[in-house]
Length: 201
Length: 119
Image (cartoon, rainbow over all chains, first blue to last red):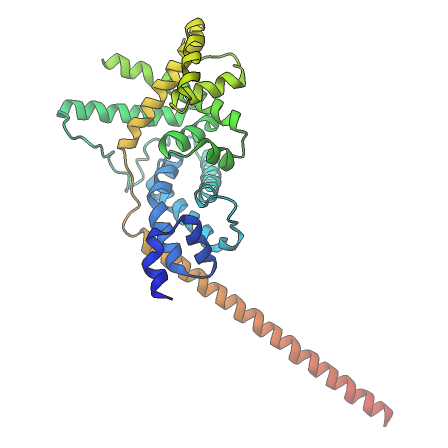
């Protein structure tokens, strides 16, 4: 391992890191894990709503990156490739879970690691914090209730802040369909949650 | 009505998305707003989409992190996998060696057998 490589990994692009990792330079992989673990965790949690399942899928996602590193080609952005792996795992988990049980996946009472939603509450009164928390819970619930095709794209766009092009690549959909699904997803979400929020005001 | 039910022209859908995300050219946005003034139902859909996006932004306050043990667990799984790979390679190498030894043995036996017949 050269010292030059070791000091530079944090400044390298994802794609450069992947190239290094394809040459069996493991610190490059560790850097990619560090960069993406929380983002992928946040993304997967919207599918599982269970922290243990979520962690398992995130681990599996990075394990697949590790195993399949040689199948990555630089023509694609690393993040697109990573999200494609994560989304496929999340979908198959979701289907499996749906087949096994029909219980609500919003908050899993059997999950000992299920923790409270943490909000940035600077400058808010306790009442406002409570209201915000209730709203967030409603939005989470509404997000679960909208059809998967719409949920997937709004999560990628509004929570993961990916570009339309990246979403089109990940979902393998034409750009027009991506944009139309984003519109429909957002409006469906507002339909579900809107009445609750406005009733509070 | 907030949720527009009819199939919209795909071009309008694209415009709506760019408009809500504020990625639209300002000159086009101006023309698009005029279009919305004449199409109340589409405007309602646009407003619903905007509010939906606003709700989703609330979720950005909810930040989840992987637990501290995540890195260690991943490393353990990778190490285990590497060990299994090595075992598999050793096994296939030893199987390969075994096959060679067996083949040589067979050739020698055949040669000896052939020599015995000739003698």
